[in-house]
Image (cartoon, rainbow, N blue to C red; front, top):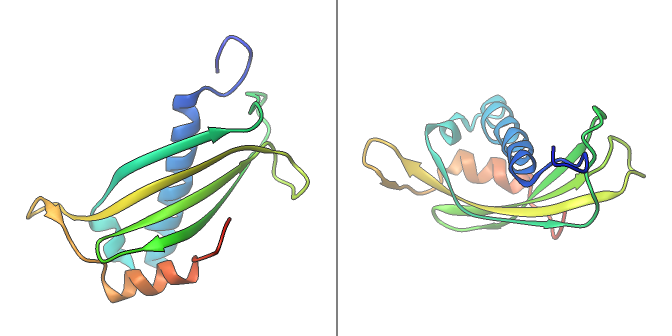
Length: 127
């Protein structure tokens, strides 16, 4: 946290990463898209803050949706809420552009059909 008791930027980015890992590795594997864990690279990250996220031990809620899919990349949108309920205020919005990556060949790879199907289920106009 920072001097004001707010969750700082680095920790907010870590919260996004933890939510993303849960979705793209654990949940994807449960739905037959385990290739997602073979390699993903964050190519772009944008975070916009709307209200302080207090470091008070309270649960937060992170909503995610896929906005765009291309041959070897996709954009994931996030809404970070100050608490777990629908009525909790929006603290931040964010987006990451993720590139599927072949760690052996050390270059981007195309999304597999299973990955595309999994991501399509999370597609939304907006989070």
